[in-house]
Length: 309
Ligand SMILES: *[C@@H]1O[C@H](CO)[C@@H](O)[C@H](O)[C@H]1NC(C)=O
Ligand SMILES: *[C@@H]1O[C@H](CO)[C@@H](O)[C@H](O)[C@H]1NC(C)=O
Ligand SMILES: *[C@@H]1O[C@H](CO)[C@@H](O)[C@H](O)[C@H]1NC(C)=O
Image (cartoon, rainbow, N blue to C red; front, side, top):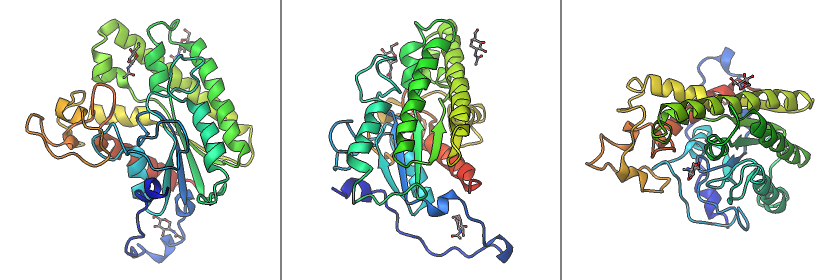
């Protein structure tokens, strides 16, 4: 049953010499992070179906053609176990945004039923980070029919989101990361909508992110004992696409079919039909980032967390 978890355990590396003694006491939340719990959709999943015990071994799959951001973050932290409850296609609340996959509410129920009191997962409020990454499917499935920029539907969806966060809080979760939605209006799925719908998609993403930030601030200020970070995945990806060449990418929005049909969490080998290796691409397919873009995400999030005590 541990095989799924152990895969991401990285043995402690060689001791790194301290830069200088006056920096030696620098510690952050990351120094004490033994567990990284992730909730989300295909951007985050490593293949759990949403049904049964998330700790049981399952086929490992990523829609990145290499390690996704959650795996890369865990690798970069170096001494944590990733427990990934994300499910491909998931939204925050599937009663509000109609969809089949197990949503954030269901993922949280699985956490409470199978993980929270498992003897195999000795997590505590202080040794665990809970990352929540929803919105891509919520916006993709709703933007066309949403009134205006989606204010009303995202208000309901994100109210449910923080009700679910509160269930995690009640189980002892105290350290949260909320990733916002990347500008996928600039990925091929958005570009293919044509100018008018792509513009609506952009407005809806911005509205979702704006409400996420406001509701996170309001939820987090209502509790005295929690740490909350909203990670701005949106700006991270906008920067990557604006400066794609500087990051080593060959195209800001293109993807290569030969990579897009490989659902592996290991870096795929180069295909001659593509512009270069998977690291040449920001996108795995028309909607999903590549492992290389996800590594930028993981590194930036790690830097942000390294300032959090
Ligand atoms: C905390 O982690 C940082 C980054 O990995 C490291 O440089 C530092 O030495 C650690 N501090 C302690 C007290 O372990
Ligand atoms: C995006 O939403 C449309 C409905 O508007 C749906 O048909 C499509 O499958 C969704 N795409 C993805 C990749 O989920
Ligand atoms: C969404 O639309 C509402 C109503 O028109 C507006 O007040 C709000 O500023 C818009 N949201 C964003 C992020 O621009």
